[in-house]
Image (cartoon, rainbow, N blue to C red; front, side, top):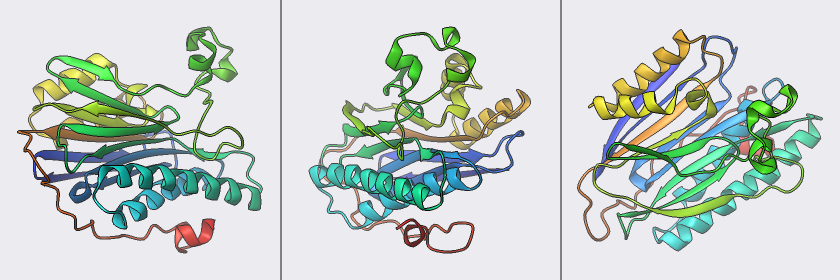
Length: 277
């Protein structure tokens, strides 16, 4: 089952989608689009039972609450997002311990726009979800996968099968968690893609780029990717956000009114943060 949303805000257009795929019973991905606040998040949960869904929902809930309460200066916004992810990490570790989960965690990628410098943005990432930038006819991955393959320098295909795709860093890992970040520039007509590995492991980069170059409607691009992935067996959950930029203004153009807050519920119907904490 898939859900596709489209929004327009100031000088960008965004669309988001999340799909369970054909071989998974539940969707452990979580997507957050705070258009009026210029914050976009994808998180891919992992763990037995409902652990993955709770982990990814915890990440996006903490970020949503932090941005809703944060002033609009970029320094404060960066600090708010970083602190939110580290608090989510601590909450997930505590929840896993209390419920005796052997493994529970979530990836995260965040695109955070600068209200006072529309040509700048901050990226945050942990795990193997990715952020791409499409500029002209070029597709560039702006994040690094936190995987055993990358850490060891050994191509994934040459690793033992049990280590293929194994993550070295995720929100909720017992030891050594870190949140990577970097600043990037934005130009007119840039398209940013945030996605879980369910997208790029099923659809080659060349096809991703071709779809964006040819597709005028971002909703149609996302719908096409979901169809392609499911036709190719739909082996994993797939979540993605596309943000296309138009003419970049000068000065503060982002409204400071936060998006309407929606509580995230776990399987028992309890408020997620209350459950985790």
